[in-house]
Structures are given as C-alpha cells and as structure tokens.
Amino acid sequence: MACEFPEGWRFRMTGWRKFFILVFLVAVGVMIYRLVYGLGAATHLNDQWPWGWWIAVDVLIGVALAGGGYSTAFLVHILHRKQFAPVARAALLTSMLGYILVLIGLFMDIGRWYNFWRPFLVYPGSWHSVLFEVFWCISLYTTVQVLEFGSIVFERVKSERLKRVFDTMLPPLFILGVVLPTLHQSSLGSLYVVTVDRLDPLWWSLALPIFFLLSSFFVGPAMVTLEGSLAAKAYGRQMEIPVLSRLVKVGAWVMFFYLVFKLIDLGYRNQFGHLFDGSLASNLFLVEMIGGVLIPMIMFAIPSVRNSSKGLITASILTVAGVILNRMNVVFTGMAAAMGGSYFPKWTEFMVTAGLIAFAVLAYCFLVENFAILPAEEHVPAGKPAEAHTTYTVVG
Image (cartoon, rainbow, N blue to C red):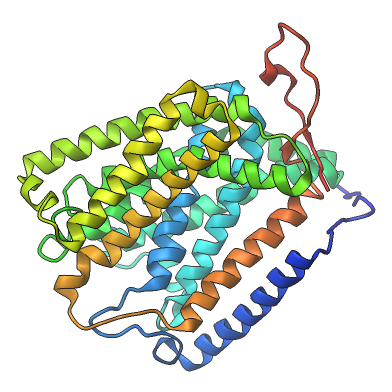
C-alpha cells in the first residue's frame, strides 16, 4: 500500500507565472475581506440585483465552458470514438479545474457562507428545488472528476494497489461523468424558466434547459481547441489539428441543431417581430446567434478552415464568445427591464474572478508539467490508426 513519490516535482517560474501568483494572492485577500464583512461590503449586489457577476461568470459561464470534459468523455469513453483520445486527458483536467472554480464561486456568493454545508442535507421539500439539484450535481460531478484524475496521479505516484483501485472505478465514473453534467447543465437553464414574466422573451423559453445543455456540449470542442492551442504555444508543441478538426466537426452538427431549434422556438412563440425591432436586446441576441453560432458553425463545416490552426482558433474563439454572451444576456440583458434599479460589479468582484482564473492557469501548468496529461508527440506508423498509439507525456 506504500506510495513511492517521484523525485523532482517541477514548476517553471516565469514572469507571467509570478504575475498570476500576485493576482491570486490579491484575490485571496479580497475573498477573506468578503467572508469577514459580507456581500454588502464586497459587492454591488442589492435587492433588485441579488444575482450578479459571480453567478453569471463564475457559475453559469464557468459551468458551460467546463463542458469540454463531459462532451469529450461521452465521445471517447461511451461512444468509443478513440480518435479523440489524445485530447481526453487535457479536457478532463481543464474541466475539473473549471468545476473547482465554480464551487469556489458558489461558496463566495452564499450570503451566510458558514451554512454552506446545509444543502448537503435533505430537508422536507428540498428535492423540489432546482438549486438543490444543481448544487448536488455540481458537487458530485466535481468529485467524480477528481476520482477520474486519481488514475492519472497514480501513474506517477507509484502505488500498484491504489492504481488498480482507481482503474477499476473508471467505467462507472465515466458513466456518472456524462450523466451528471447533462442534469445540471440543463437545470441551470431551468432556473430561468420560472422567470417567465421577467426574462426577455428572446431568451425565455420552456426549452431553455435544452438550449443550455446543447450550448454546453458544442462549446466543449471549442474550449478543448483553445486549451490545446495555448498549451502548444506555451510548451513549444504542435497542435493536434487532425484530432481537433474532427472534434469541432461534431460540435458544428450540435450547433446546427441548436440554431434550428432556436428558430423553431422563436417562430412558435411569435418572437420574430421582436427579433428585428432594433432594441438593445434584439441586437445583442443577433450578435450572439450570428457571431457566436452561425459564423463559427459555417467555419467548422469548411474543411480548409477547420484543418488550419488559424481557422480552428478563430472559430473556437467566436464559439466561446457566443456562449459567454448568451449567459450574460440571460443574467443581465434579458432581466434588466424587469429587475429595475442598477448594478455594475465592484472591483472586488472582478478581482475574485481574475484570481480564480490565475489559480486555474497555475494549477494547469503544475499538473501538465508533473503528470502525463498531454499526448506524446510521436510518429505514427503508416496505416495504423492514431488512437491505437495514444500515449501521454509530462511536458515542461
């Protein structure tokens, strides 16, 4: 049962990493201030706007952008599309870190944070609450991802018994790792179904849970692509363009169904007149749908575009930006008229988000430099499928 820890844990200290450490330390100070003095002192939240920047960015956007973990796991481990295996571990890592940040963001947004443990208990009627389901699913899914990552940890921290235990757990964990996200990704949309008389009808729909789920799935390949491009640049590697090209093609099909379903939904609810009325809401909705869905979908569908690094990265940036704008529109633009009052985040709210992102970047760098996360750059013999030779390596 004894564990043999490897020698020489690595973490290259660069100027950027020193900057991220500084940002994170400042954010820790801000978070301590928020916990001591409360939301009123640390944020600009008010009775009209009880949900603000942290819910929009650290939770709704964070959960959506972490969708690359479950979408890639679904393709690789459930559908057995092993051609996507080279990016599976990196997708798991970025998703796991994303969900850890989501939990921290949720904790920071709890008014009486010292009662954070109460949702873990089942009270009479609590099972009817969408928030109860979201909290449990996100907590369980984060736990599942940490356990999945345990199999990677014990490849380097030598313990044959623990390695066997974690490997044995992987099949049921993969299943849970696909089922749980479909529940809470859609349930985040359900939170806004009850705002039928407040959320702008361009975004409100009984199908909002389905829209949230579909968008979290198609943004996954885009996030995996951006993560892969940043890792390639940071560590002097080649992008996995053949793998990513096929992955974003899957995302493009989901984007197509999302777009068609959106148009059908708008037509069914007679909202096409509102769509082109020139209001701020309609203009932002058009930017979201055209710039964040239609254009990148077409780019992903063109082989010459998706088979080039510039085309892949550009279309992926548009896709990610479109999903971010969608969640911001739901939380802010679509609710502005009904909420009344005013709200603009305090600098401390921005600082906490920046600190969480800095922490994720530093954690990602440490983990890929000490554990086999990224695919090894090796020659694949002619006629052999690439997935049959997928091995992972430590970089740095």
